[in-house]
Length: 462
Image (cartoon, rainbow, N blue to C red; front, side, top):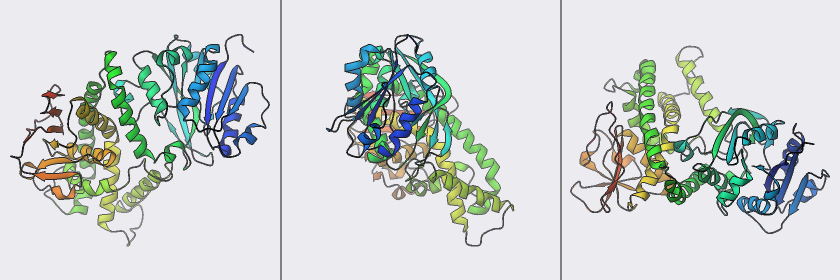
């Protein structure tokens, strides 16, 4: 065995007896055998009996009957054993490590004493069948604060954990919070290889806490709490999110325009409305109905729900192109709805992932009163993002009926309250129109006005 310190693997455990053996077996299969696995278990199922079958001295199993959150389990080990090791990794009981996980993570963490390394991963279903590959790529400040942040799988040095004071307790997003707090203090290393199989199943921690919607709410809450600390280290997440949001708006516009040109003949036949000039008109008509559909992340079986919807879409497109016989039971509105939903979700995911945290943090940071939020623009971006934030946090927004986009039925949007434009007060004004993205708090005379992008038209507030 190598003379270097062992690699510390920490596995919080709670009622995953049906998965934990496979997770431990994947640790035993590591081609770098110089590791120690600590399992901190609070289970009420037969996990202790499962773990009793293992006699390897590198495996330390501790059963504590009192329920502990994962952050507390990680800290329990780091506080008692962390000084013995240089590197550690947060491991889940329902995931599988690839045989070279420890070896590659150890090599990546050797870059400096304060290093955090993360890898790509494969997804698998509850039965262990592989369902896809998630290429995580590089992270920057904007992506770290998005709704697609950095969490497990990752490894770090114990020196970094000590500097951060360990993991947050009683926090659903404990792994995400650790990575966010590490950003100003650590070197981040991406391993472009799928070193872990990540299990998606109905008994996961995500589902136990209410699904993706509740997890996203926890992200926003954590971002708000961490904002002062990150800003104190000369990092500005709000500006980083804004810069990314402006670029994504341009990307979405070009992709929508391209889709419109390619599918114009089909959509014209579907809608039979020649007055529609762009794909934005199509989205504006159908978006309230699109938004009533559950987002791709919010399904009982995340690995199959969205794939099933896309397969239905492709089958209908093939029928329209004459590649399959047309099913007489299919209606034009049904086909139009599926095409529009697919395009809207696919093209807006990254935009929403960055825009929602930006808007949430901007309103909170400027001292905005969430009871007095007002839309300065009724463009498709502002309507869409504020609708998502309404469903995530319950925020409502006021809008002037007379200043709304022509032919837009405000009553179709459940998060809007129509008001008279003359009605004023210490309100927070919001616009996410391309080139005119800002939040202004009238109460404190503070704003997040960015530089204007030269290629975007301007929109004036009411």
